[in-house]
Image (cartoon, rainbow, N blue to C red; front, top):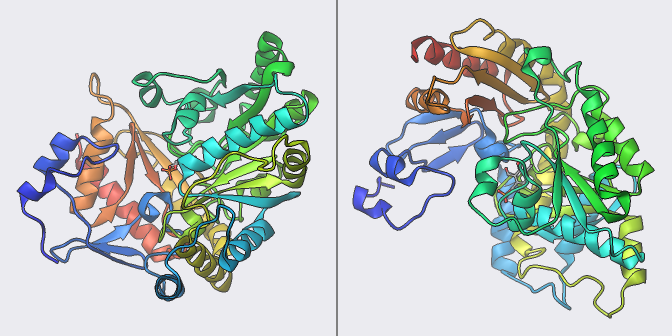
Length: 438
Ligand code: PLP
């Protein structure tokens, strides 16, 4: 495939990107296999980001490719409104088997953003079904990323994602847990900050628990730059939610499917939420799919408390799309056959040592990690926040490495098939680039 002419780039409004800069200097990907991308002109790139935190099993894995091809030929689409198809039940059953505790029902969506808005709506439907329809307020957290739909940006805590759009929901926010003064260069979960969960008590005192439906957090914040939870923080959040009869939703769109060395972060951190939002790794990103794992208490309450034959007035044309279900089944088989969740956990010490070897490199003010995710935080350029990390991203790209720049942070999240040698290669190349970038 040849690179398109410059003129051909105009129609596509590229998401979360400076369109003017990108179209003046485009970076295109044409092929992918296992740990590598290839550009249209045949240059190979080592994938340090699993695409966008999503290709956990590596690219174009045979079982997933075959499952999609087979399904596309057999049945391209089947509605799931008053109809269904066997693969949707099978995919739900297999996902439920990975979910912790009494989370044993699955609602299908097509993305992380839809999973978040679905979970928020289920929380409201649940409270109403049990006669607590006054519990409508939703609590998020500063620096939280919950996708880009109106529910997600309302509970989300990234200012630019919120400030340009009208905030329609009744929300409040917990403080974020990023604390460079006390926790810089933490390995694994930071020591300090469990007490930040107590801010929920203040929020409850302000609004009253009778108005609050749910709290939603990423167990480890991803898009804000890999913020593992302080030791004891999630346990405290869980205890306060339980005490005040508030649902706890974990947004595991990034942390799900092995990223932190377990099927879900809930299991890794030993904290049980009432719902889990997922997407990305559920199909290894080969077909768009999201899902919400729901506890049987919530499911049963909504079904029993419904005042209409349809218990939940919600769903997408493509909920449980056959191609996505086939991809999910191929993906779950691949994770299991290759032991990838265990592999991520086993590789964590090597990964941790490698990324922390960049301590002392130019501009680096923090490094943090958990599972196969890490952040290297750079000193922002005075008056030009985010420029330095973008320059590192571009320089890495030119030298055959894909990293993710978010704010002034470089985020790493390689596919879980990464080898120790490839981890070293990722870190060496970043070190070389940092030495040169102003
Ligand atoms: N929630 C979290 C925690 C995410 O990291 C993301 C995307 O990165 C989303 C939601 C939104 O997912 P999507 O881009 O598939 O809508």
